[in-house]
Image 1 (cartoon, rainbow, N blue to C red):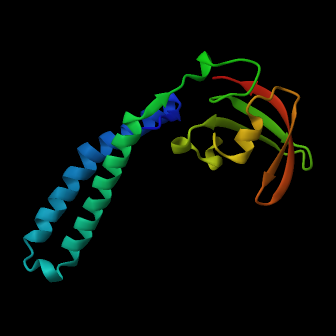
Image 2 (image 1 turned 60 degrees about the vertical axis):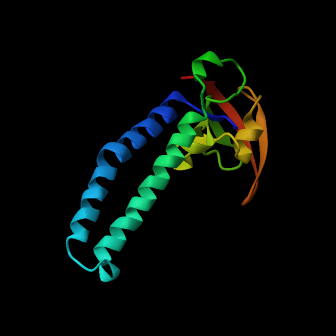
Image 3 (image 1 turned 90 degrees about the horizontal axis):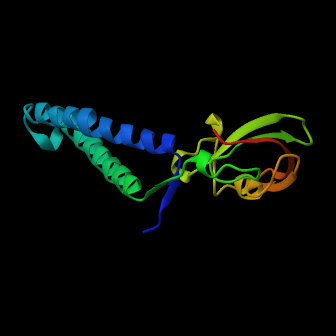
Length: 157
């Protein structure tokens, strides 16, 4: 089985979601199914079918989370810290064309969220940044065309 790299924060978020699904969501949907069954004929009971569909989703997500957690390779950014960009680095960049500054942390696929500044290690930008240092320029091919960035700062927090 392939290990799934993630930060400690990403691992904690997965564990919290799993705990919520098992201790809150699962019991609530079991109760909703029981109540829907009391309403009689199941073949025409929309509440029952909706609850069963939601139960199926919850059980699937629980299995997915358990699989991810069992394959997790938690990497502490402070232990890999250095001058070059690696997994877990928080990187401040400036777009050389627009002068717009952006800050990203390079994280695993399951915790990536560009809107929250979490960049997937497998993304074109992250792959281009790996191994670079402060002051380096990086050219990246994106779906919108080529972009050039300068690395302003590399932190491991």
